[in-house]
Length: 554
Image 1: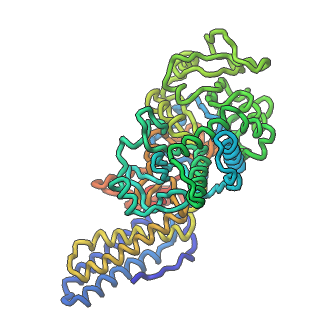
Image 2: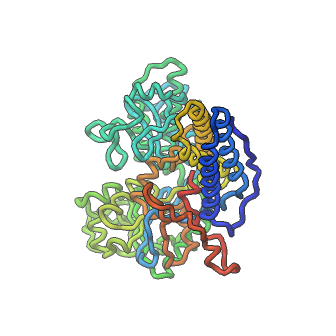
């Protein structure tokens, strides 16, 4: 017995805080549970006890439906994993690809088609694969690929496989088969990859698909596997993975893709109109700016001219290309080389200082810190790859780090959707009801609780499908943070969809982290006050990123 509820509820005004709404939900539920516990003592028959259960359920559902929806999260907010005060930041650093230059789906389609061409010409794959089409909505970042089994899956923060997210080609793999393959839903550490998501010499079985380039890799692996299965073509998943990876690497190393993109950046890059304004704000505030990218200078130069104009170098104090990240951050045996723009070649002389306006190649972070004097927590570096860009700067060198996640805006749009909003609030309420009533052990009670568990599973599936019908949200596996979210929380102090979003904050802004209660702690967010209570009414406005993300999350 599941009672339907309407999702056509008007949005709440900005003056209603999340803490107040959730407190109202919890108070209503707790009040209903207390009423149920009292009435249960008066129930002597199974029928009356079942009635009491459903009355508690109806009261809880009514309480949830009576509340207005949670206020929207600003998709262009900056979110904090670790408290960060911008007044402490003297130096801002940036990766280039997918950080300063945000490529669109046309760029991914180009990669996909070029990789297929390489597979046909170099690896002699069936020419039928030329008919495959890139699906930008198929995969998400943060998935894992079992190289030996040929399975794509999503794993949570506790190394547990999320059921319903395991695919061989386009075919879902059942929980029973997953358990037969792995023995359980847990993925042991020795099956995983190295810190940077790469396979190791010991033969790691799992490949983490973490950056935006990996979306193309995921689609190629899935699409070609499906074609092989449909046409009864024998294949070895190890070789398929190796061939696809080499094809994508060749696209980059041969620079065939870069040369095509350079001809028409407007076709492949989403223009960030606010980028020059943001960089100018930083310079006027007395900040130093640098770029460290793996891309070649001529590609970066063409893209920067397209976005910032011919004098783009004036925005930056230092520009380093072909940096070979993550090696730039972990090795110290590769010195800097000056790039001669007139000759389009690297110089041979020793680099003893980094001159503003020059272009440098390769190098290492120890020499970088020595030559610039930029140290530790005064540096804030932005990148899109959690490992190659952010892990070592954060852990080994004490830099503050910011992750650029363009997909974040789409995720937040789903979170703000009224239908998803209502599903999440009722799922939260139903779990509270189950938690309070699960100690009853008679047959009738167990039957009812099982019905509620079935409804809860349905709500979980609905919440997953709102993001992606195959893999759900990048950040959660149902209610548990995803593996990607866990690594993001460890290596990124802040994260946002674009560096331009920071232009909405002052140079002295402090990104505070909402207190997330541990299971044994009091949930202070239930306290009945809000910014609305503490500010004069005419000063109240919706603050960017001020929503309690632990309550409103996917």
